[in-house]
Each structure stands twice: as structure tokens, then as C-alpha cells.
Image (cartoon, rainbow, N blue to C red):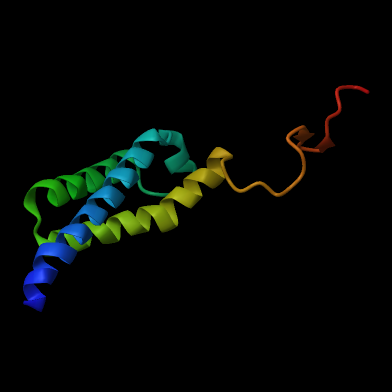
Length: 112
């Protein structure tokens, strides 16, 4: 009875979570510029789109656990390694304080 509840309740939720993670990674990979991948010295945009696209297809259609786990690893690598590097070279990194009017050499106050 416990295994039946696990098979009918928990496993589908894990599958949906892996699908959502893969779709989010695919969309973020799609939105990043091609030159940002080169500047961050990561694999090409096409490489990540193919890997994450296959992950989305496997999670949505096949449901083979081994392939889903491999896709989960690829999605996690994208979120933990590739995306922060892309944000850093694209200027989308974390703010280091200061005001929105700060320039590269200090505050800009419009010539006042």
C-alpha cells in the first residue's frame, strides 16, 4: 500500500518538477546571447539548447528514469555553472550596492 501511494503520488510530482526545471533552463538558455557563451568560455548556445531540449522531450514524452536523471544533471549544471557565468559577462550579475545613478567611476548627479 505504501509503494502504491509512492508510485501514484510522489513519483509523478518528481517528474513534473524535473520537467519544470528543464523547461526553465531551456528558456533561459534560449534567451541568452550567443556571444555571452563564448565570453564565459562555456559550451556553445546550440550545445546547451540541444541538451536541454532533449531533456524536455525525454521528461515530457518518454519518462525513462535513467534519461530523466541525466537530464536533471544537465539542468542543474546549467543553473549552477553556466547561467551565473552568462549573467556575469552580460552585466546581469548581483549589484554591489550604490544607487541606480552610479556610473563606473562613482555617482553621476547630472552636472549639479
